[in-house]
Length: 89
Image 1 (cartoon, one colour):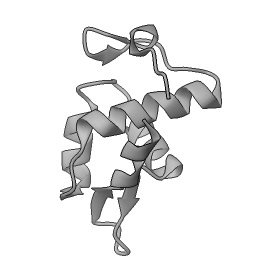
Image 2 (image 1 turned 120 degrees about the vertical axis):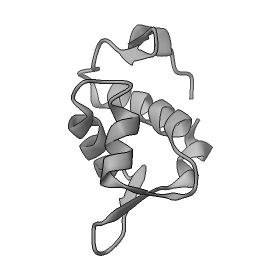
Image 3 (image 1 turned 45 degrees about the horizontal axis):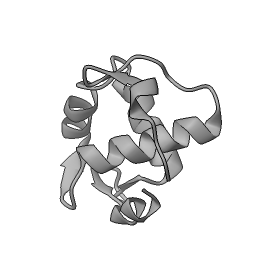
Image 4 (image 1 turned 180 degrees about the vertical axis):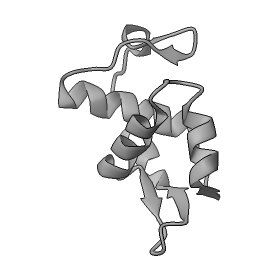
């Protein structure tokens, strides 16, 4: 996948949120791959990581879960990164 991060990210922050689903997906693949490793995270930890990239970190978290990059434990207390996303980039 060829991803032009400069189109969406400036100085480490997301400055333009893509409107097209394909572009949004590529941005989230990139973001997930640079933000997370294979450990489990609390929601607070996820929020702290994501707010470094975009003010509406809840939006980022929701899309990462919807796209399947972040998974939640059955009780919803912890999140973990699905490393198979790395095969997509």
